[in-house]
Image 1 (tube, protein in one colour):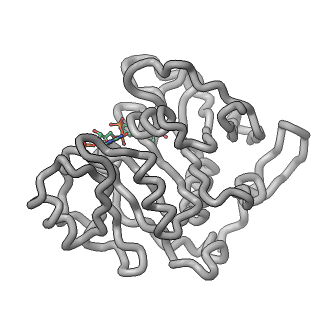
Image 2: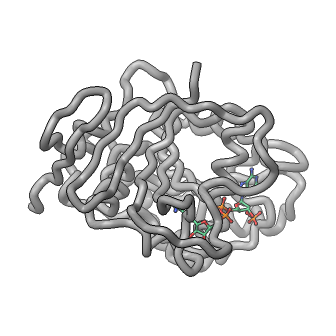
Length: 250
Ligand SMILES: NC(=O)c1ccc[n+]([C@@H]2O[C@H](COP(=O)([O-])OP(=O)(O)OC[C@H]3O[C@@H](n4cnc5c(N)ncnc54)[C@H](OP(=O)(O)O)[C@@H]3O)[C@@H](O)[C@H]2O)c1
């Protein structure tokens, strides 16, 4: 087993060598908790040449894997699933102990309006029976494509002409998914913020400048009003990476 990664807490108090799991524990009190997970450069870019992979260090990769292990379900927008060629979550020996009394891996829940997804891809066909991929869409989509999807996925219809994310979260809660890790992308994160559907942002800040036209962690019209955040905790590693947990203020 690989050694548990350790990071330094810088806020609210300073503690050296905190285990990554202790740093990222989910609050137990909520009946549902949505944690959005992103990595971004200092100037806010969420991708390098269109992909997120170039931004993280090894700890960020382990943080990503840990969040997956903590999740009851992994929520992702179809854009990210397409760009990053998503497959089912993998059983991770390092964090397996965190999934006691749960399925070995969390299912993926993909949000899509277009249903422009390859239902013969591993994301759908290679998901284990215990963690079948979920497709979240709305009623105003092709019934035929939904039927096709239903052969390889659990289909949740939330909303009529657009996906009602609040209703989708209720549907997930009804299925027992309390700890939701949302891996983005920017469009889904923005839409979730608009309906008050985000409880926490877990942001890795990479000590890098990118510029160009890369997306930030948000996409679309300016949030009105802006969403103020409170810093819950701040961690760092000697290579200059920062790991922040924010919660919407109030
Ligand atoms: N730095 C990071 O941590 C990070 C994390 C994730 C992604 N990314 C990057 O972000 C980029 C993708 O950005 P994106 O904004 O396209 O990602 P996205 O939010 O994953 O995908 C947008 C698509 O997801 C579906 N979707 C999202 N919100 C929806 C809603 N409310 N209702 C219905 N469908 C919804 C739609 O799919 P349909 O088109 O199928 O209707 C929409 O076109 C990629 O380059 C990826 O690498 C970076």
